[in-house]
Length: 162
Ligand SMILES: [Zn+2]
Image 1 (cartoon, rainbow, N blue to C red):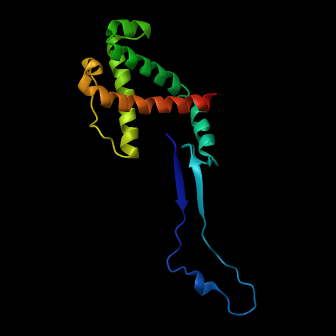
Image 2 (cartoon, rainbow, N blue to C red):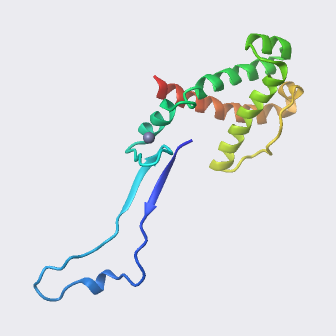
Image 3 (cartoon, rainbow, N blue to C red):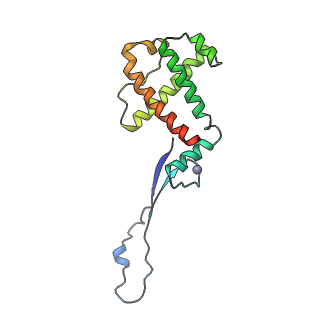
C-alpha cells in the first residue's frame, strides 16, 4: 500500500571528491550528493516523514477511505462461509448478489496472498477460492494464514482512521 522509497542521486561520471580538495588555504566549493529517505503515499511531491503520516494520507484520499469498510465486510463474509452459512443468506445480509460474495472474498484473499508473496514469499499457491473450499479441512491452514494477514491489515487501517 505504501512503501519507503529511497532516492539515491547518482554521482556524475568521473566525479571524485578527493580531486576537489584544495591543498592551499583558499576555501573551495565542494559538491557532494545526499541520500533522502521518506515515506511515499504515491502523490507526486508528497514526502512524508513517518510511515504513519504517509498511511494516513493514503487513507484520507477518495476511493481509499472505503478500503476498511470493504475489508471488514469481506472478512465477515469469509467467517460466514467458514461456518457453512448458505451463500443466499450471506448475500442477503450484505445486500449484494450471490456471485458478488465469492468475487469479493476472492479479491481480498488475493490481496492477502500478494502481501505474503511480497514479504517472505507465499507458502501456498495463489488460487481462486470456491464456496466448498471454506469448509474444506484441507484448506483450513491456508485460509487461516490469509485471513490472519487481512486481520492485520484491518487493525492497521482501523488505527489510521481513528
Ligand atoms: Zn501524501
